Length: 449
Image (cartoon, rainbow, N blue to C red; front, top):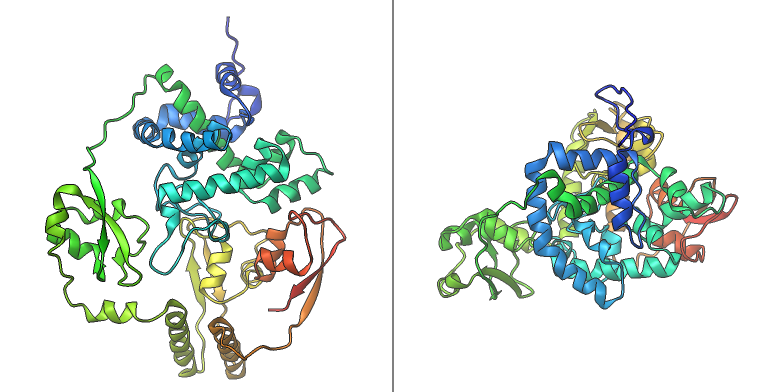
């Protein structure tokens, strides 16, 4: 006789350890291989959502998983890596290439910008190869392989992948060198715990969907696509109208072009239905002076022009208005700080943030109102200085100034870098750090911003 311990919870609470469904627990342990599948609070909540509350979405995910997982597993087998890693795209992005994570990742595998560049993906103003399943899969597998080499454990490699090596190292430090998977997971940020829970529920869904009378949902048929060279600057909106197809479909088939525009140089390939290739050969992009002019302006110059215009606008008045920003899905402090040319530390100070965690819908103060003309002029000079640094003009090298930071318990390279508005690689290179490992009391040399 199956005995289930039930605890009365309010609707805003999540399921706790003591009301674990023993059937779910046994099923997870049955399919567990090289990566621990722990029935955490977040995992149980995600499983119940997939199996009971979001059944239609789960049926769509089953279809997408059946279509994509086999190819990913083949790539993993070539490297002798755990095949259960193939479920990461389902849990991280739901196979949506345009999905952004809460910690700043993007694409099928939610790769961070720095990681994607490091493993050979191209990210420019026009394209983002994290949106390409094959290329991002190759990069993700290579990254996972290096993480396993670093830790010698696939569970820790998984945690590092969905967070960062710095976060895992910090968790190990907080736990006095203990590398037990469950203990480390429990001490990590709630966002990471939720991402791990989604991974566990993705494996549970794909293995036990029939037990809940779920079946893969039939999706509209996808036409046979073929890559063709694009020798001109074009907008998907205009091409879709010419080919009499959906702009949304054309963008989906060519998701690496993040602005719905194919630049003229270098020459790219786009995917279109085979039966439309001949018609495509006769296509000519309509003249659009605004877009052509935009294409000819390099992104870093365009940003500087925008900043200069903002600067001029501020100069025209003696009062600088208060600037706020409403947090959207996928935002993080680093991105917002970079967008508005302020430091992460400044954002945290203005908004009384105790950590780097922000929430969708939250209103952040970017700049406080300034009525003092001298303060406004000071801000303008700082903005101008930032612009000059961004342009990276030759022969403008200045003497580097350093500050020193003493590592505290719970710190990680990632957190210290965000706090001071610099990259992890800067800290690692300037302090000869190996494997991202730092320890409390260590003194780090940091470039003054």
